[in-house]
Image 1 (spheres, each protein chain N blue to C red):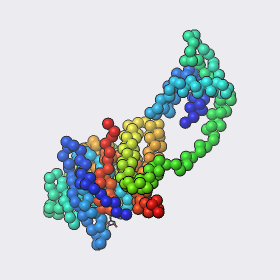
Image 2: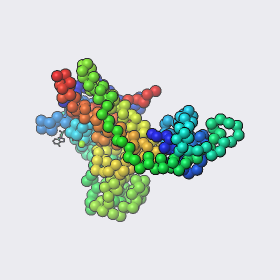
Image 3: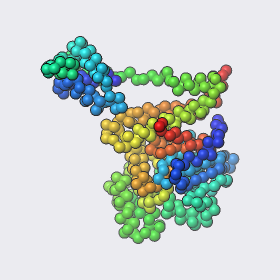
Image 4: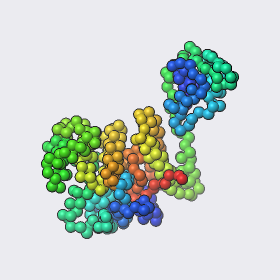
Length: 174
Length: 244
Ligand SMILES: Nc1ncnc2c1ncn2[C@@H]1O[C@H](COP(=O)(O)OP(=O)(O)O)[C@@H](O)[C@H]1O
Ligand SMILES: [Mg+2]
C-alpha cells in the first residue's frame, strides 16, 4: 500500500496535522495494522522534500506534531496519476506452499498431511473473517471479502494439489 | 487416488460438554459397484453448524441422505437423540423428517403450483397446523428471510436468490432441530449466496437448530463452526482450534 499517495488523497479535503493524518489513515485503511509514528513522519518528510506537500502552519511548542501539512498542485497530480495507473497483478509464482509440498515429497514426508493442516488453517482464518464481515459495515465487508476470495483461491489450489499428489510424487522422484 | 485415513477419522469431533444430537459411525453405502460411503463417521451437537466438504462424487450427499434417514446405509449406525434411525419404522422416520428436520437443496424444492406463502406454510399444514396459523407463521419467516415481497408469487415468478430464501424459510418454519442443507448456494451468484448463508446461519443460531451444510465452496463453509472433509467416501474432521 502506498502510504504517501494515501496521505496526499486525504489532504485533498484540507490541511491536517501528522497525528490527524495517522488517525484518518488507521480508521479507513489500517485494518489490523495501525501506522507507526515513525512511518508517518518519514513519509511526510519525503512528500515535503518532493514538493508534494507544504507546511502550512506551525503552532508554538515545536516538534513535528505541531506542523500542519497541505497538499500542493503537484501532490494532487501525483494522486491522480496513481489512481489512474492500474496496479500490477501479483504473479503468485513464488509460493511457499508449493515449495513445502515439493520438499515434503522429495524428503519422503507426508505432503497430504501438510496440505490438510494448511487447509484447516486457511479455513480457520476464513471463519474469523466471515464473522467479522457479518458483524461489520459495508467497508468491513469489502475488506474481508477481498481477503476471503484470495484465501479461497489458495484453498482451491490446496485441494487440487491434494488430488494430484500421486502424480506429482512420481514426477518429483523421477 | 486413495488417501489412507488414520484413527483420527473415528474421532467424532463433537464439542466437549455437549451431547451430540446426531451421530453416525462406520457408514457404508454402495450403489451397484460404486462405493459412495466407506466407513464414514459424523457427529453434530445442538446449535452447531458443521460443513461437509470434499470433491464432487466423494460421498457428501450420500452422507447427508443417510444422516437424514432418506437413504438406508448398507452398514453402520445413525443415531438421533439416542435412537437408531435405521431401527425406526418407516412411518416414524417420516414423521421425524417432517417435524424435526428441515431441508434445503440446491434447487427444485418448491411446489410450482403453490404461492411462496403456501410453500412455506406447507410443512406446518402437513403437521396438522390450521391454515390461518400456518400462514401467519409462514409470513413471519418470509419477513425474517427478507422475501416478504414474494408472498403471493409462485416460485416460477421469483429470482433464484429469492426462491432460495423462500426454501430456507420453508425449512425453518417448523423450527426443526436439524437443518440439512445440500449445496444451498450452488445455483446462486456470490452476492445472493452470501445473503442466503448469512440468513440461514443466523436463523439457525436463533432457533438453536444444528445445521449440516454440504458444500464444496470454502467461502460458504466459512459460515460453519467446524468442517468435516469427505474423500473417497471417508470423512475426517480437520477443524483446527483457534490458536490460544
Ligand atoms: N442414487 C445413486 N445411484 C447410483 N450411484 C449413486 C447414487 N447416488 C450417488 N451415487 C454415486 O455415489 C458416489 C457419491 O455420490 P454423492 O454422495 O452424490 O457425492 P457428492 O455429493 O460428494 O458429489 C458417486 O460416485 C455417485 O456417482
Ligand atoms: Mg452432492
